[in-house]
Image 1 (cartoon, rainbow, N blue to C red):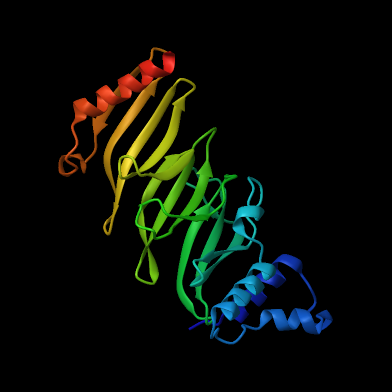
Image 2: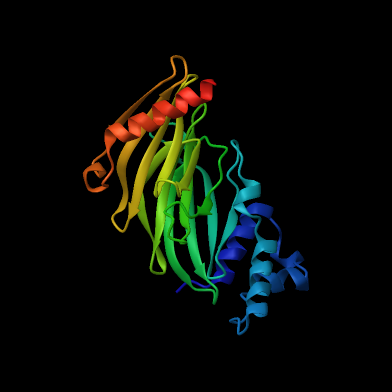
Length: 250
């Protein structure tokens, strides 16, 4: 197992370029993984130390630079995102960053290591429950167009993450009204799409999609591969969308 302290030290020097001989005693102490927490207060302190060492991904990502950063997973693990800039290629052959994600347990061991290719995006990695099961999924943005961001989704299964699929949109969230993951995207200035997906142990499964055409106040609905087992009625979904469009006009 890889120790947490060694990963942090490598990340820090990659960012700051500090001379090891010039480190203060306090700086050297931060690199060392603290002892295993015995109480919740000690666990909170460990998380605080990690958070102070590496900035949160929520505050460091922008369209130009994908900095090394961290996310904390429910007091159980820390996710370290280490970026090797311009060391990969995107789907169009352009320069991209290779991002390695190390999932570190709270006792400092590496549970899992993932790798993604990230190009032009202002979105940041995040942990979010998009399946409605109180478990946090890992969403990695790989590129952003004019409006929509392309995300790769990893779901928690046991103590590790398993690849669940890819989605494209400006918003991804669990819709408790329908009981599915809703991916909102924009196809044009007047066309909005919502893909409804079911997050299962086999990954994201497409149930159905709804398109709203604002230029002529109409809708269309089409089924996905998982629609037949959903128990839903396509005509009823279309009628619901049409009624909402008519209501918005008033």
